[in-house]
Length: 126
Length: 285
Image (cartoon, rainbow over all chains, first blue to last red; front, top):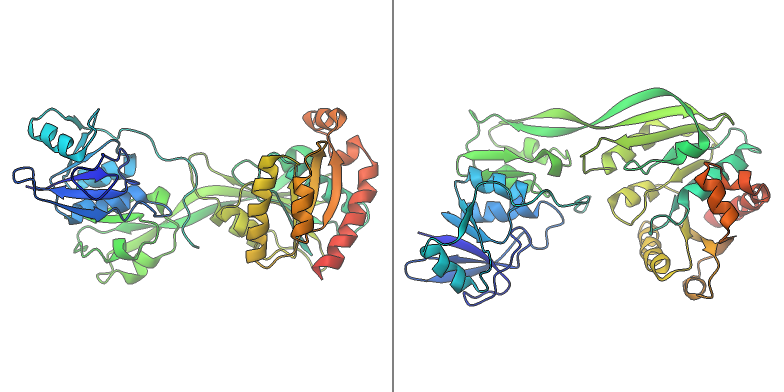
């Protein structure tokens, strides 16, 4: 099984990043062995559509669950289509702690987007 | 001669300047200048110029529609979409219409021809003439839509100036794509600022946009009152002409709050604006 988490630096001992689409890194973890791998989040510096881009990355990783602080409506719809279950960090501080809580079944699973759309216009280079 | 009135910072007086500039020129020029309100997210120039709108046209962009029966979920569309408006997840291809810019890349590059395009209305264009004979056009973005650029682009195509006709464009605030689209093709960018740290900060950004588009700029300092000379210093250092100063006066604020234009409040500004226009023409050519 593979789960994926948003973190602020490329390590399982990193602090969690509460943003999904704009999080700095993704850590892909096998919760049983705690083997992990870090990837920069392609959505972090996207001019727009960060949530869908990040969700596409998670979908391509074939992760079964995504852990983050926050899932916007586009990311939520995309992850739901990919059958990725979504969990929110609550007061978890590090990625390692979040994985432990996920294994213990004590993270809250989300069934709806946790916020509305981002404000403003998202334009890439025209 | 196309003049885009822009600012960077919002609320500095773009519409105040643009509407009175148009009125002062209309009194002397034939044909009267064409006025375009490009602030399609919150157009307000009509409140001052009061055109009678008599023409209307919807603005649409083309959004992809995926035929799931044909789609092989190869992911090409998601890969080519710069705006991440289409995602392929397992056996589903999802379109996010609010992120789509209608560029057509996914449709053109789908190897299975599984994508067709359907128009989505995002706003409306309106056109009419003011009591002074100024042809007036504006765009109005639908509530909830995020993309102003296609509306501004269509407005510029729809309300085309006649030969020798001056165009005054009231640009949106900020320095993002809608402002770029408004300035693009202008002969001169008139930047309205105020002598505050925010005014200066955003003026610098707006000047950069105009420079990147290779359009000459001039500055109007509105609400000129403070001892803060940093806008002046910036303009001198950057070799940008300060074309006019409008003092910070309660009478102007009160008049505008009543829906009056600057030249109704202080008629002497009509001549000052015409003199400024002559200087703009000289600098732009």
